[in-house]
Image (cartoon, rainbow, N blue to C red; front, side, top):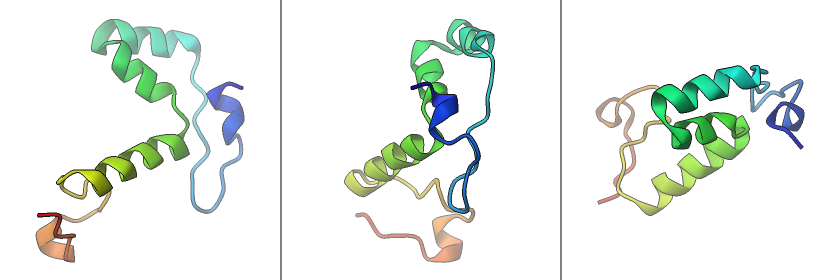
Length: 78
């Protein structure tokens, strides 16, 4: 199953995964590296799951919050 087929219409919690031609990912791989191209190919929900795992297991700033930790309470991971 391709990433375009995983969430074609989107839903209330997750936007539809954009459909880009394979050439887009080839350019990403060439200019930014294979790892970034691999990440871009993942469906939105899977990228968010992976980010949530890192936030839960490591002392990272809450990059998923629209506001810095000082302004919206943040989570004390220390």
